[in-house]
Amino acid sequence: MTFDPRLHPRPRRPVSRREMLRTTSTGFGMLALAGLMADPAYAGPSEEADQRALHFEPKVKNVIFCYMSGGLSHIDSFDPKPRLAKEAGQPMPFETARTMFDQDGNIMPSPWDFHRYGECGAPVSDLFPHIATCVDDIAIVRGMTAKFMEHAQANFYFHSGQPFTGFPSMGAWVTYGLGSESKDLPGFVVIGTGGIPLGGINMFSSGFLPAEHQGSMLYPGAEEPLANIKPTEADSKQRRRLDFIRSLDSLYLERTARDPDVEAAIKNYETAYRMQSAVPELVDLSGETEATRKLYGLDSTFPPKRDYALQCLTARRLIERGVRFVELTMVDGRNRGTGNSSNPWDQHTDLILGHGRNAFAVDQPVAALLQDLKARGLLDETLVIFAGEFGRTPFVQGTNGRDHNPFGFSLWLAGGGIKAGTTYGATDEYGYHAIEGIRTVHDLHATVLHLLGIDHTKLSYRFGGRDFRLTDVHGHVIDEVLS
Image 1 (cartoon, rainbow, N blue to C red):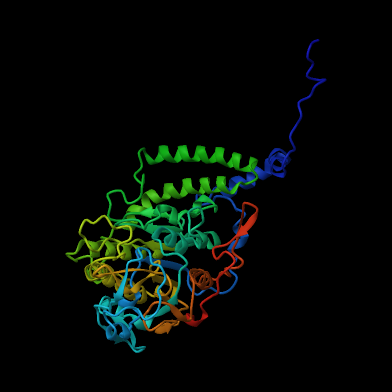
Image 2 (image 1 turned 180 degrees about the vertical axis):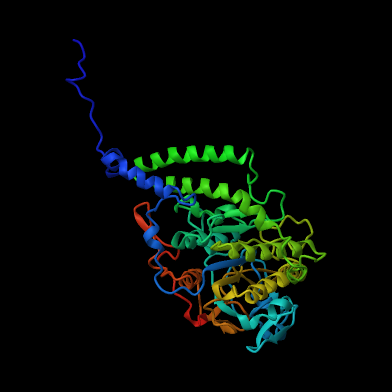
């Protein structure tokens, strides 16, 4: 029998609304799309677009996160404990919880003296003489707690609210909720000059959010500050190639009912193209004055301080260009080739040497960042966070170190919407457990989103059959530090 196609027509799949618009009425749908795509920054409206309506008036537009990976000791920095000096060398008077290495020794007082600064009179140790001069611009939170005492888990938890990889970082959630004010640079940038905290670059992941919200690693002191930023072909040729790719991607986008991953890919192509000129201009400091360079410490003879000064100055330049969320990674201030640049504040031994050099590396640059932002009128629209993943124990580990302490530690905030000169929360007389104003990482995340104009309970993304949010089912805004 001869096959007759007229008697056996092929089954047709349903025609989508977008295909109908594309193939009828003289293609007016495609004409509209072509007009929209004429803007090189346009990647099409995505499903997240309606999330970008602010829930209330924002206090800030940008965030700079100075992450002190490894566990900065709160009792040696922003939370003085005179009782430790009175009982130095004695056993802890109560049972302690198991620590990371479970080598608990006797009470060890802080090797650094504390002094009161500013009109608020906040005590700060001699580790941070420059930041101490800025206490009237910051709010110290002393009642922070964490659920995890292992570095990688604690790092993931601090960044994403979950102790493992696969979840979006705080920076990714911020750009998902607000978008970016920059057409030439990513909305979420991570600056590096040293090591990446334990857990690796997945801490800056977009997780299940569209890929455009992934943190972009920037190394301002490197010959190639961003991977593959130098074009390998003439601009005109590259532009023609990208236009061709975009035309194909746009057709595919319609057939996939505007799949967010496809949208993100189109946007990333265009952002990457514009970054080829934006990034070299960003890292070119020739326009910065000598006074600004010295303010940050770029003239220091200590390489880790120069590195961190470069991070801080680059952070200011990024937010000036509309980048929404900037994170600074730590450098190994000990500068001894120990290979511990992933968690440099992790002093299980040599507390005085390690903390002393790390603080020397970051103290002046961070204070300069606050002063520079304030002088330029940018501090009122920027939130600066200074924090590590947990604190350290009041008792010694070995002969001269401290173990991890997630039960109570400090961080500080500065910028728009912050009640400057405030100290909130408290740990016990030994600095071991938070006892007043007890707060969690989820509370910090809720507060960051609140200052940006977002209700943390309403910023969600459906994945795997459920709605996820940065604060999971937790989190309360820390109203006590808000103005």
